[in-house]
Image (cartoon, rainbow, N blue to C red):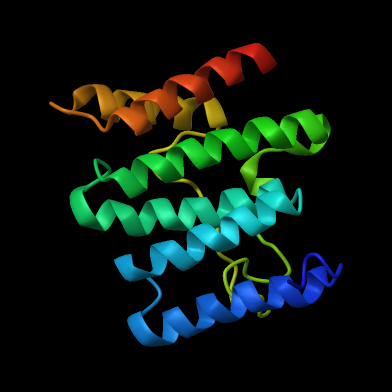
Length: 168
């Protein structure tokens, strides 16, 4: 693979290319975009670019909310991913992780496609609050409101919240 060969830029370009293809096929906010965006977010997380991973996960959350408000598994997963990325960002760069979102509302490239941003777009994480803890609490609240929450998501939410409290 490109990663094992140390060709990280090419591997990242491949992830962004997949997102561009699915965007052209389905549209930017189609539910079928979620798997390719999840792979891209995981890539950024692997590369220790937690801010960009959070931005991609916020976009996933917005798309997933179309399905059933924010009660869909994909929306809950995105909230959990935002919380995890925030915690990992804090561990690796405490100063950078605590900047308000308005300080990072514009990245040089759009994280989904890698092309220069055409307009300023603020990611306010509507409904998620301003910290990873709020995202985790919201995810757990959603799961607790369900009659039969998926056990793997409930377990993951509890684990992420436990990790959060160990860190902070």
